[in-house]
Length: 201
Length: 249
Ligand SMILES: Cc1cc2nc3c(=O)[nH]c(=O)nc-3n(C[C@H](O)[C@H](O)[C@H](O)COP(=O)(O)OP(=O)(O)OC[C@H]3O[C@@H](n4cnc5c(N)ncnc54)[C@H](O)[C@@H]3O)c2cc1C
Image 1 (cartoon, chains in turn red, orange):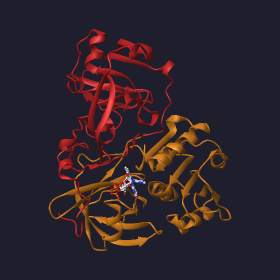
Image 2: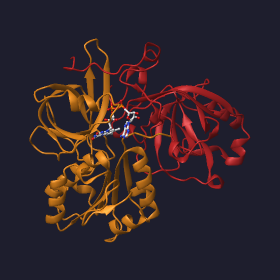
Image 3: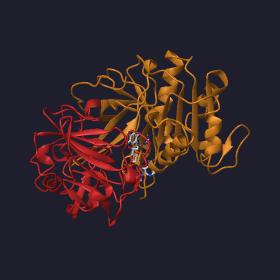
Image 4: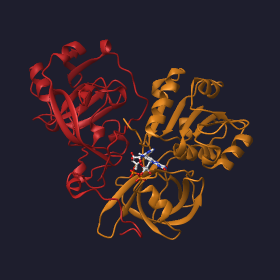
């Protein structure tokens, strides 16, 4: 249905191919969170890998800082409709975290956990093979608390709510368990190119 | 309890614009009648989709300002952002009788209904008042005994959306306290002047800590307000936020 009188401010040709359906380009860096921004002390920070309920590896901030850090520059897409191109992150690839822990991913499903109690589910296959990292810096600087610092998950090929802010662990689960937004009507997978915003999309 | 019944699929549908009101110099309210509407929970929003003749589409979210009722209609209030794509279209082009595509209701966290109880603290910056107005209006119908405090920050007196109704509710409802602060105009009798601060927060919390706090507005406003609420001793888990955007970080 065409909307009477609407012509739109469309993106340039170069941009439009990089914009998933229903998204618009922003130069800002908006924020989506369900609650206030938690402040996480670095001396209280830790990151834990769990197989079900069993912890299999844990790092403090200083230990995590010694893991191999790499850069990842990607376009990101938020379910609230904004996209941002060429966001430059650095952190530790999930592949390297698993290698340091000396394990292969035990199950096909993962639940990411955060300091504020937030959770989000991501298929394990979408976290490995160079696709995702735990990011600790944005544009060369420590990630600010409102954008998820000290560390956030970065899964740039899925809607950005999957890139859990204030992340403190990954839990491998036997089945695909919905996280915070997924239990509130948002899509279990969240592919922006297939516009999987809500349950059933 | 948190999480309202979400339909299995959120389908796009059309809605007809039944009425338009200029609420403030920059905010218009729109009464929409969706073709098939099954209700919503106070605090939720809809997604609007506009389509150009060549198929190009733009989508944005807008909160519902009306309370859940049996009218089959919903009220939105949209602030015109000068360089915006969608909000100026609503202000300059949309007329009564136009058909607009939408889907919803959306949102399972920034919601309030009677079982959640109170006391509740609502903090609004600018058009962030919209979902909080839905909550206030709904509370007045289903649970007027629940103590509520509404803090509204607006630029000027004339920028206060639904001002007449707000001031009337504040005067008539013994369980409702409304604190208005104006950021770009010297205070009028009974209103505060300046950005929200600890002094205002002390006033808002004078009756005790709320069981639930809802903060809504532009991203910088929500960050500042939520931090103040925490600093005033409100538990982290009891604070729910909705950020509209507009961060310059
Ligand atoms: C869940 C949700 C509910 C919302 N409910 C409402 C509502 O009830 N009423 C309402 O008016 N808006 C609401 N918004 C904001 C709305 O979705 C649009 O972002 C807004 O109308 C701007 O769209 P636009 O196309 O006009 O501007 P755009 O073309 O998207 O942006 C134009 C410029 O304005 C800036 N900008 C974007 N948002 C803001 C902002 N909030 N404050 C200051 N600058 C901004 C952008 O960075 C950009 O520079 C809501 C947003 C969300 C996520």
